[in-house]
Amino acid sequence: MAQAHGGPKVRSVVALRLARALSSAGDHAAARRTLSLALTWHDRSDRDTDAPRWTAFAGQVEVDYATAAWHVETGRPVHAIPFLRSAVNQLGPTYGRNAALYRTRLAEVLMKAGEVEEACTEAIASADAAQGMTSARLVERLRTVAASAEHIGTASARSFVARLREMGVTAKKGKAT
Image (cartoon, rainbow, N blue to C red; front, side):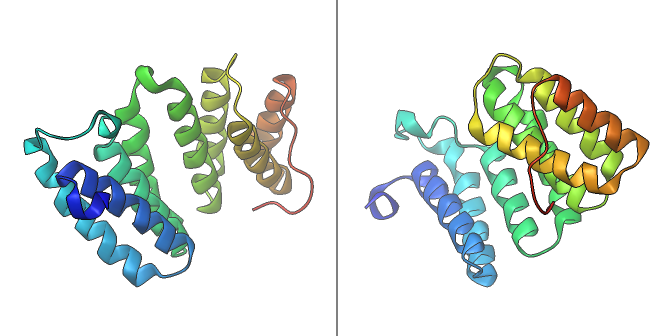
């Protein structure tokens, strides 16, 4: 319904959500086409005077995050990094919880890409920024990064894991991702 009757902003949001779902489901070609369509609608959304209030959050951050997700799902975490950095930088202080979540996702992807030092730095920055917030998803992501760092075992990775423990976050049990 929204796709058929919404303006460019609504259509962009719907296409971004669909692209992420398709990517998660493993249909990467369809996800890529849908991302392209989302970008087309996004480019037209600045002239959308009838966009509903609930679409206010949608913008380049959403496009970058969905693009990063596609790259990660297709096994190319290195290509996702610039998009995640862009999304984190655009969020700013207004969306503190989302910024912490996105930054921790960046840390996860950096770890997958073998950028251990930077991953640890981003994860600590995220944990510091999230002090006082409650988010099970954020804690789970931090635990995942910590589990990967424990398996690496460098001095900086050990220091990172110890710092997270001081903050009350322990590494995820089992296999690191």
